[in-house]
Amino acid sequence: MKIFVVNAGSSSLKYQLIDMDNESVLAKGLCERIGVTGAISHKSADGREYKAETPMPTHSEAFEAVVYAMMKSEAKVIDSFEEISAIGHRIVQGGAIFKGSCLVNDKVIEQISELGAMAPLHNPAHVIAIKACTETFGKKIPQVVVFDTSFHQTMPPKAYMYALPYDYYKRLDVRKYGAHGTSHHFVSDRVALLENKDKKDIKIITCHLGNGCSITAIKDGACVDTSMGFTPLDGFMMGTRSGSLDPSALTYIAEKDNLSAADINRICNKESGMLGISGVSNDNRDIAAAAESGNSRAALAIEMQRYQILKFIGSYIAAMNGVDAIAFTGGIGENDPELREYVCDNLKYMGVEIDREANKCRGKEVKISTAASGVDVFVIPTNEELAIARDTLSIISK
Image (tube, rainbow, N blue to C red; front, side, top):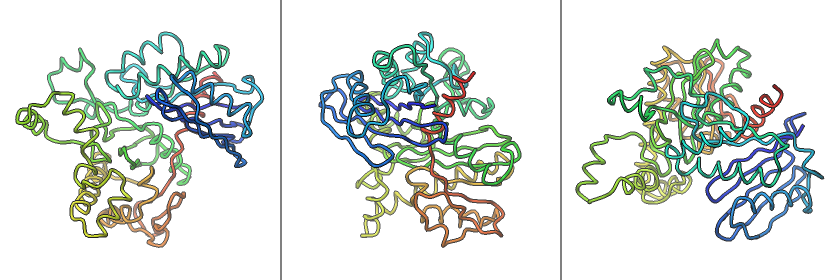
């Protein structure tokens, strides 16, 4: 059984074709510059590649390019649509409506669209992609939507509520929703498997660290708190996002510089975080290189981010009354030994002890804690596409 996994952005389309009989990736690719010029990069599991620049005024043309790549190009992997059993879509915001993955129908599409105001860069693009997918593949192939927010729906009200007038929650659904749920779910399941324990018997903190970052506390097999909030802006500083800060700082800046709400939103989401502090880049590799060359602002950005990550982990240890395992994932979490060492060295009070040689790993699944450590620590590459494919298979099997 083959599942086609789609992750659509406003001007991009990432995809994988996965054989669920052995969970192997048959092909994967990326369509870029949709609505501008258009280009596709496609690669099969055996290393064959297909690249082309082709007009993609909309996502419909992008899907047509994907179909050609998968079925007709020199890197083809299937002969017809009939080989695809289902299509799974990554959806960023499910709000309080979607507590789990579900089949696509007109009502679901409408609800995802209505949630667009809470994820304006993502949900509208997801809706466009679902409709374009239907145009290209037809209605016979079932489509499933998998939400970044659904894993966090188990949070108790004390964790997801904001101390605002209650009317905003009742009338506008203003509360914490979190993000990266598919990644946190996949990684926590993997931790339980590596620990050879039922997830309900283990307290886990998963750290998804990349250009976007979030940390999640998982107890009794369920999310009890997560760092991202009403939007992915909340939490600790990221590549270009500010993370949590005093709202009065924003109103003060807006009044002084005569800025609109849209201006503040742009500044906090696209001009802040590691980029805003370092003035160098939003990429940790560039910032680290600058810090090594003596750039004090770059060094400060690194110090701030590590400190904030440590504080969130510490707060979740307190919230769960302990922790059994910590997992690092994402582009930074999987590839930054120095960050992991900083965090673990500052958790020695919890009995954390890392194997410094094992911690030199990058992008590999490794247990980096010693046998004597009071908390097990792992590096686990995330696989959101596989998690989406598994959910899709589960839904259509029912």
